[in-house]
Length: 399
Ligand code: C5P
Picture 1 (cartoon, rainbow, N blue to C red):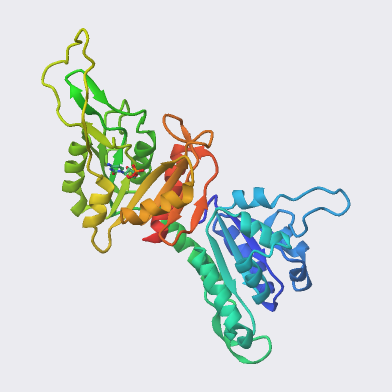
Picture 2 (picture 1 turned 90 degrees about the vertical axis):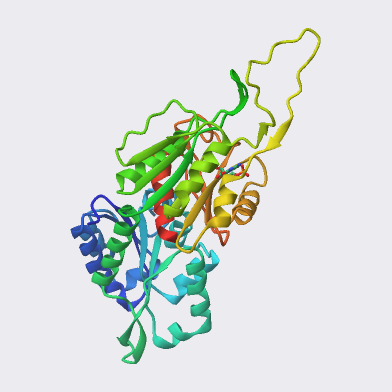
């Protein structure tokens, strides 16, 4: 069930660390590749030799290998991971994670991780009940981390209460459920807009933009491959949708795109607004080609186009999610967040024109996914197909 998944398993210094050996084994049994990162005090509870023998990979614990000076890159590890699991997570490590106290390999890896993070707290009942622990766990939640709640029962201190690390089987099942949920989109109905709009001046001229539709088409293909039914409202592009579950509605202008979206939206549960819609259109469209006059320069008066994302945002019902895109050149994150709120979106994918490899026409993109609460996940440079996959994973997480 976890075939090919890269899991970073972070182990901290608590009695429950002995269960992490079993957790590593179960993850590997499910097909995952496991890389262990231990805090120095975790080594007092379980030896790195046991863990490296189980995973087939040297355990990482220090920033450098003492005798060779070789540097262990927490950034590479953070990027390698499809998920990071910290089990057991002591009150100390939870506090460091919540507050960015990056004084060991585990916390630096956590801060660099782009992947979802699962935290399985384990500690004595009084530590668990302390307001600082509650506050730190809530902070981790607010960062989008998944908390695998501690169980109640007998603790190492022989006291009875909440603080036992969840059993390895429970943790593995939680990961499997997460990946299943994030990957399957069976039964989902998506509406995606893509490409530019052309705003007609006369039969041979228009106002348009350089959008090629690559990002929107990549999202449509990925969603269809995951089992979703997709309606793709596409402006004029030279791309063709490949997957049979993609229904393409070809439009030209923003008005036509709006009409198609308004019709499809009530049957939709996820709308992704990827199109580069022209902000203005000529107020009149000439029936005949406008002739060049000798001394006269024609004046084209413009009218504002409808905002499709904002219109759908104002019609959104419970259970519907709208995701927008924002192409910004300055104050990127705050402008994108403003846009998200103004248009009543649930998430916005920011791409900056300043980032090489991002934007119109390229096969790659660099996205920052921003949620309603302002929490932002910066994705590295990747193909538009990979970016589509990450975006859909993120949407499934907020559903
Ligand atoms: O306001 P701005 O054009 O920057 O907003 C970008 C987001 O809004 C994108 O998701 C885009 O597809 C959507 N949009 C729209 N209709 C418009 C303008 C933008 O749906 N008229």
